[in-house]
Length: 94
Image (tube, rainbow, N blue to C red; front, side, top):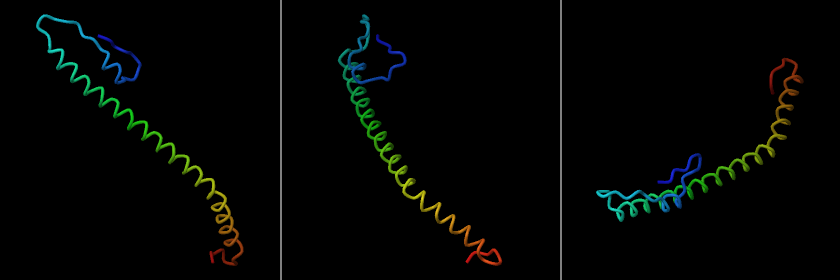
């Protein structure tokens, strides 16, 4: 049996695995049919993970762009608020 240490389990690893033969072992056809199902599920999960990671990166980039565009406006508004407080004789905001 093949064990891959430190490597992500891939569908082709599951499909390529070979088991030792025993006199009263499991039905090889059933084992391979089940391993094919597991391999298909691994493929699907890897695709979903790739899609999720791509979407997460797209959202991170969009957030950075939004923060960059809005950072100047926030700083200007914050400066206006501070100067308005200092300009008013009682120190109250207008």
